[in-house]
Amino acid sequence: MARTEPARGMRDFLPEDVRRREYVIGVIERVYERYGFEPLETPAVENLETLMGKYGEEGNQLIFKILKRGEHEATGQADLALRYDLTVPLARVVADQRGKLPKFFKRYQIQPVWRADRPARGRFREFYQCDVDSLGSTSPVIDAEVCAAVSDALVELGFTDFVLRINHRQLLTAILESAGVGAPQHGDALVALDKLDKIGRDGVANEFVARGIEATAGNRLLALFASTAAAVSLDDAARFIGTHEAGQAALANLRAIFDLSSRTAAGGRLRFDPSIARGLSYYTGAIMEINVPNFAGSLGGGGRYDNLVGMFSGETIAACGFSLGLERILVLMTEHQMFPPDLAMNPADVMVAAFDAAGMPHAMALAAALRRRNLRVFVYPEPDKIGKQIKYAESRGIPCVAMLGENEIQRGEVTIKHLASRQQVVRAQDNAGDAVRELVGRG
Image 1: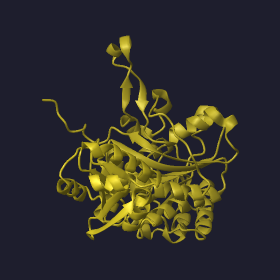
Image 2: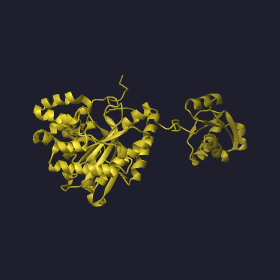
Image 3: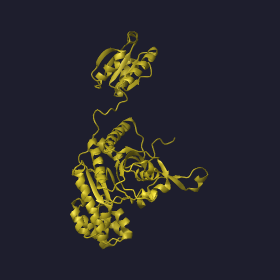
Image 4: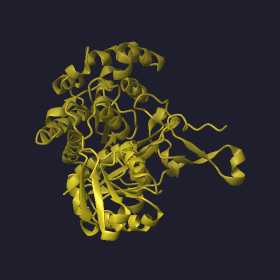
């Protein structure tokens, strides 16, 4: 027999899962739109050349490639790929549609992405990203507003103890150069540093050695971070890099972001952390990650990527964005019971029950009238004993049953029973919607 479970790292979503997902997405969309961001969607499949070379060495290995089709299939070559993230497709769209877009383009995008990664707790091969990006300005206002938007979204979802860690790629470059790491090895050093919170100081030191980074330079680099990266201040970084011009400019940019963010929801949550490297190679300025206690990995990350759109258009277009990981948010919210108690997890507000086949046309008419009142209605599809029908409604969590027996049909009435309270009322069918709304608390 064929296997019935989904492919490893993929999942089926049952109704309760979808309802929780839609709730989270709805909250995030409302917050993003309050900041003036507009929706955008892109195809699941991109040209392979669009994605390759945009995510660094490790990212390239995680791209799901699609073999050529038809007569070209036997070559084993790939020309398409499932999208790895939503940022590179955004850059492609901006380059392709530049003439139709405003000077300052603010968009959000919530769609699935695919990565050939090793599945783990909160990490899947297919997952949703909730991206928010702003293009067209190098102002630190943009960076601060992105931080504020994702902070507001998490607060509205019920998170209270998250930290938004921030660093700067140009400051990282200055730190690497000041430590004595050669320019050709900057990429290797950043990949290793990006794992500091996962493999620890000793693990990063070993990876430095494996990547050929001179021991003295690696030790100087790690010395800056002391026992915990959170203890390093902007002033500490400033002293470490001395008169490094680009590094000092990056520090000034970070100070501006901190100052602007102090007026927003992100203000009390923003922390400087020089260990953040963000493995993706397209970042050019401030880089950010959101973390919560006792959860491995981040709830999302982002930063400034002023050169990425230029890879497609040949012109420099400033951009900054952030991506929240929907799957990880759902895992935490489910584990900590953070969903609203009144989140509807049942299929309907009321079930219409007919006693025999002759009553089914009347049941369909009543259901149509109730739906016109914006009620969710389930019609029990078979004539059955009323007790059995009520038990079915109870098993599905449907709060009310509208019963149409022969007497009710003759009188143009309906008997409505609220299952939890056992309250039962008889109403004219024209007024059934008001009665159901009152019983389920939706009046």
